[in-house]
Length: 193
Image (cartoon, rainbow, N blue to C red; front, side, top):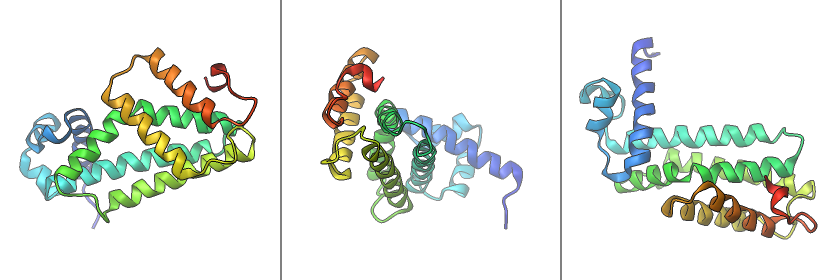
C-alpha cells in the first residue's frame, strides 16, 4: 500500500535531516536530534525506521544510490578522462559525510550483507565503468585495475576527511594521485582540473 503524501514527505525529511545530522555528528549523533530537527516526534522516526541502524542504512543507501547515479550519468560525457577524474575529485570532496555515515552504521550494528553493502558495491561497479572508459580513451594507464584505484580513492578520501585540507592542498594532493594514474603524457596538474 503506497504511503500518504504527508507520510512520504515526513520520511524524506527524516532522511534528509538524518544524513546531515549523522554526516556531521557520526556515531555520536542521535535519532532524538533527527526527530527534533525534522519537526516530528521520535515515534514518527521509529514508525518509519524501527531502529537507529535501519535509519542509518536507509540514509546510506540513498547516499550511495545518488553517487552511483551521478557516476553513471558521467559515463555519457564527451571526455572520459575528465569524467573519471572529476568523479574521483567529487567523491574525495564529500568523503567526510560518507565516512561518518558508514562509521555510525557500523557502530549501530549494521552493514554486513545489507542493502547498504549492495548499494556500495553498485557504486564501486559504476566507478569501474568510469575507469574502463577513461582507460579506453587513453586518459588512465592500462596497468591499473579497479582494486588499486579504489584503494587510492578510499585512502585519499580518508586523508581528506580526517585532516581537513584547504582547497589548494586538496587539489595538489589529487593532482599527485591523478598523475600516478594518468596514461603517459598526461601528467601536468592542469590536465586534471
